[in-house]
Amino acid sequence: MFFDSLNSFIEMGGHGPYVWLCYGIFAVIMITNFLTPSLTRKNVIKDIERQIRREQK
Image (cartoon, rainbow, N blue to C red; front, side):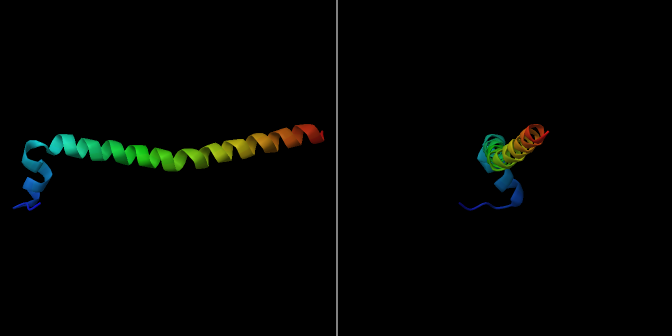
């Protein structure tokens, strides 16, 4: 694809809002899929540490 200017690239022949919205949603989903497992892992480790401390008393 060839665009005459940056503005025509952003507008994408009138389809710009739809295209950029899709890219934004995709980015949010990818970031969520990347961060969720690490946050879940931290919570599981904290729960296990609490359980071990309770059992030692």
